[in-house]
Amino acid sequence: MTDPTGKYADFETLREQAIALRRRGYSLRQIRDELKVFNNDILNRLVKGEPAPDWTKRPRAKDDLRAKARELRLQGWTYDQIQVELGCSKSSISLWVRDLPKPERRQRTREEASAIAKRGWEPKLRLREEERQRTKQAAANDVGQLTDRELFLVGVGLYWAEGAKSKSYARRERVTFVNSDPDMITVFLAWLKLLRVAPEKLRFAVHIHETADIATAEKYWADHVGIKTTDLLKTSLKKHNPKTNRKNLGGNYHGCLRIDVRDGADLYRRIEGAWYGIVGAATPGGSPNRT
Image (cartoon, rainbow, N blue to C red; front, side):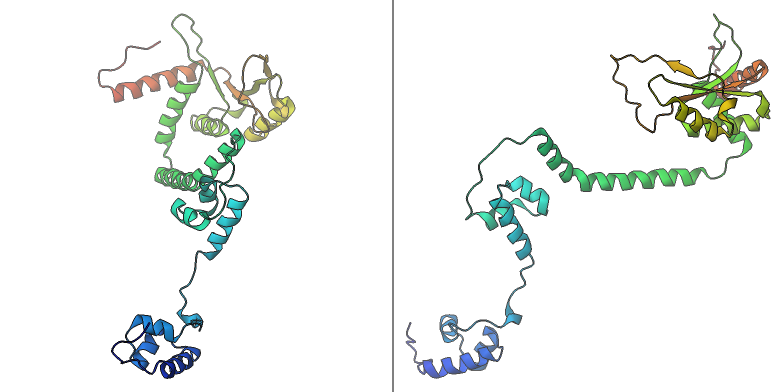
């Protein structure tokens, strides 16, 4: 290209100066200002063949991602798979690998599809779990210390939800509580202690499926309530039905613990009365569903 104005007529001299400046680490802008060459085409011709200084090169933060994306594409990965693996956009992936051959499409196995979906959801699931734990901890902190009255009311509601109850057609005024949750057992025993039920009046028995590890379950519950396994009543075994799809399996399954209070008729009446006292306080009209 010629310079019709004659302003840059001594091209070779300018080129020598431009190359010298370039080799000293000047940027194009600095060379332009130094030599007063404001024609971009001529400026680029002056430094043609001379590499730009390292400091003027834009950082390529995505170079590693690009290289990895190309590597995965050559292994036959799809855009979706690469996106999940690298966490970058499909548009970037498309730009990086567009010159590579398209992999043969094959049907994913159920396990592969499940793994891809799981990896995509993992960050969201982790955030949800963190939020869940924060909410639970905040709620636990709100409870604070229980007064005797609060524990009494909790225990009444707990028993009426989970304990044995007398029926109008079968009058059995006895206190029997069965549960598989050790924390429920702990609260129930604390409630009995509040009511001054003597420890010697308590009887314990394990209820469990016959296919479970019975000895381990008996030791687990005995340790939990602070007695010897020999102090347990005879374990009640539930017959196994092969047609059922049981979920309560594995080392964390200990069956249920039954707690009986000997001579508990009077205590049962107090529990029932207290329960209907709660119902009456919650519904001013009272409740007719009394046994």
